[in-house]
Length: 223
Length: 378
Image (cartoon, rainbow over all chains, first blue to last red; front, side, top):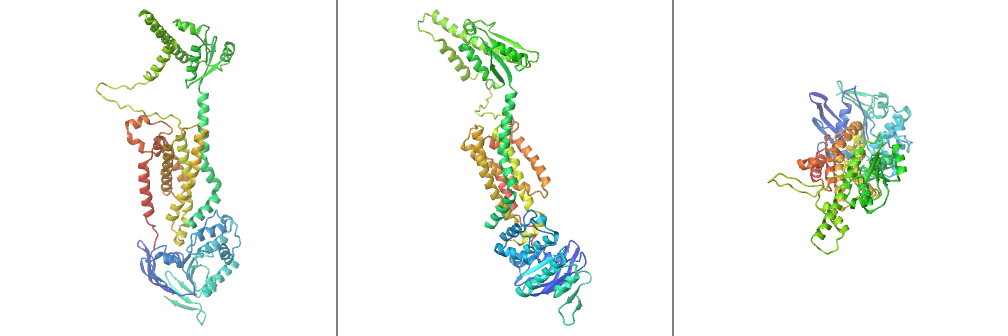
């Protein structure tokens, strides 16, 4: 379980996150929305241990953030907004490169299967010749190599065609339902969010919370 | 460790063409430069023709002496050929050793021994004429001395048979052993330190190699910029190794590859260019390379853009090569200010020494770089 309590993050005097609290249970897919500059990426970076929170508590399983950072990172898979790949390598070389540096050993077939799960079939293609959408799929596959428990995705489906978007969404839901992964992702596509997410958190000036699985369909609650 | 080595294998497989080029470039460019300098110095020699009308021991001795002059290209021709080439300006000047050359010298005659020809384009005729005159005068004086000795023998009534050749040889030996042409001077009551140090030649093969090797090392180490791209920083948070450990092992990997290639390069250069090769030279080359690898590795970490790095590394290479005395000899400077030798590791290489100062400082900087933690840690 991921538990965030009164999280605050400031850059100098500018407060980006102000008393954010929520909980993410195993097997859940949660969407994170908010206007530009609301702090979605900052929240994900903080949860991914890339930046340090100014105040508040974050707990992932038995680990409290601030201690045993490497153990926390082993449990976190972060899909960044920008493409973080070796453009000059092929899809295969990228997967093998990061697999060799990963905490978890995977066979070449497993690496390939991970790409196929992301609807990426161009195994021998150089990354530089792939479309933007294909690169995003590989970006996601690389982040999942070490089989993380908490998967944080920062606008992962930008530039991906509708069919692939649906397939990836279904795959993420499957990961959550079958393997108990916790998935938190940001998107500006509300249709995508409402289709695949169990709950939605909105952060920013007017934070709110929607439980999409509630009996009456949509339950909006002011935070 | 094995994972990092596998990633290196992937990288080398991808970049093998450029890596191979940069690895063998110091060998090729050193060979080319040395050969070109050799051809250029041959071309810049003064061509002179020597005509020997009657071959004798003294005429042969004079020719051998002239052939030993580094800036003369001596051709032995007959008079007709020689004058023909002079008219075509293929020769700067022509010198004719007349019949009875040896006989006249033995008789102590100074005039009419050699006849010289020049053209309106002879630029070195006067200087070469003076040089040949001095050699001939030396022979004449030596002969005169030998005859003086003979006269003394007969004056004092010694019946021993005197050997003319022995006296001449003894005089040549004395001339070289007493270093008549190279003497250390000092003021009265002041001691001067006399050293046996040989001055380094202007074009030293290992100096040229050191220059090209430094450039190629800088260009090979650009992998640090390519693998430390900002967009990939994020990945290093979620790998079993951090970037510094990855970069350090990669540094060792590339250093080993370069050591192997450099070993072969040094062996081939010493064979092809007939360079003297000693264990001291091996050791100094090994430590020189270690120093420049550390330097290039730390230097490249200061840059984020390849172009800026390439431009700066070329500048640094030129400065270190100049300060190291690989292009312009700095022995004079070193005698005056000995600390200058610490400014470049190339100086140590050229003197077959280990650059202790450089290695010590670079290793300390490497440790500081390694132990300075990552900035981004939550």
